[in-house]
Length: 421
Image (cartoon, rainbow, N blue to C red; front, side, top):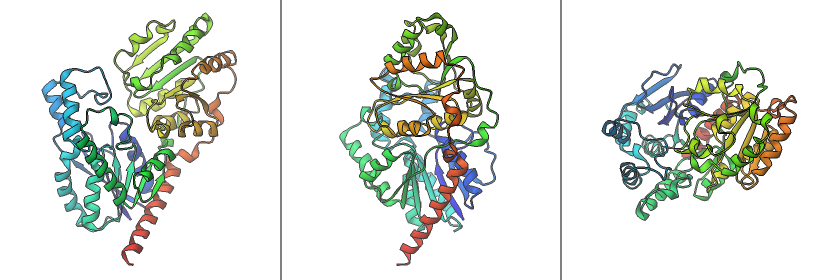
């Protein structure tokens, strides 16, 4: 059996969106489903045992880079402090490129895919978004070639945390919502990454939803280092302003009045942090213990995580953030380090952390609890770390591949039965 995967992000790329299906595909193949991957603008050849179609296109981001001699800022859709040209770019992107800037690739993509699909050996189509234009490509190909289709929503569409902050017209908003509803009601099944988001997509008109979490690849964690004895805290990945809360730093600042605590503290961030983040923390006692590092390649990041005693995670206090469970959380789990997470009350993330007893989840407005937690941990730093006894195999890509394979087979079977009625 073969499935066609339509995904913008795939292979050897730092984009976090690539990790879900780059990792999933190799294990799903071992469970009897061979991937045929349709992706875009890959610069490096991906070493795999299945077919990869690399579709090269000219995109707005490329034009931007040529004009301004720099990459599009990673926070261009969320940053409030930006220059005139970036604001203009966001305005154009929000109102003319619907659902996203990759919509201009759909015509050429369909042309390429038709040449592949006429072979008649594809049993199922899977599209992964964002960018949600991938779903629109899949929708057309599914209808044209009469092939069942599963839409994978790694993030919500109009419910994504920054959507309401875009300079978007009512007409453009209406088009987004109509396209979103068409995708959800047309596909045979929707996969998403949390229960809350599944409920959200059901409310918008999805016929059927399944939750398959993001997970970790066991091969990335074969050589975990020994437990870190230093009182070290690290955050990996993007840290935008919406996930920063001053009460967190006030709690750590209080603790750093104790010179022994301060001398043992390391606070490290690997990856993008918003402009002005370090300057904001300079007023605190621990500012000389804070270090910011450039993003690491994924393979290096998963190894580096094990150097720290505590791994930090923060959710935005925004609509639908209760369903956000970042990919790095599962990789944090795989290190068996203690997770310290912040977010709204009763989120899907808080429920998993509490169930697995793998760390601490602190509700926004209750950041003062961090002071009590860290003080207790510091005074008992030779005790076993919370993450060390967690049962996490359910989130392994090896186990998740079995869920995908079972869902794929059931979707094809149900589609065939419906067709024969």
